[in-house]
Image (cartoon, rainbow, N blue to C red; front, side, top):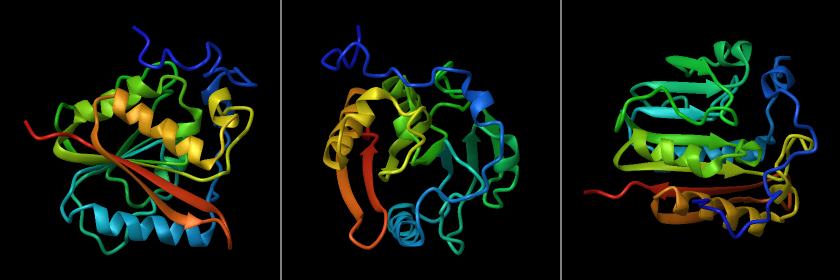
Length: 209
């Protein structure tokens, strides 16, 4: 059964359907949101993630935007570029994987306290499968924080994302998390975009038994 059957048949088509690992092969050691949005995201993480948490940074790069003075357990990175992940000083371990080909995460059940996905959700062609995997890996009470701006690689963003505005993006991500089994889903506007990049965070939580 298609968990997103109300969306158009071509909702997850892309303008460029070539190999994603080849597209992301050149290392891009740049930030994809501006300083104001970055500061807002770091502040949000500081408030949301408890000290000592085990964290997954999904679709990561050379920076994770986590507060430098927040003590954490493991910080596991996933991404599409080995050089970018190797340059990220916050990661304790990492791996490369194309989630559009294989959404299964090589992580144990209930092994994480928080899962982060910063400015990557627009590229997922199997988002409910990916977020269901995040829910499997999170402990009861754990949370997935999905943040996004208005920037993207347009040829790699899925069609439904390109067709929506910011409020539509928030509703779409909320739908993804809901269909993946998350509860208590909240939407926070972290930066309104009037003086720089907008930034929205959508958070879903894993219910206690």
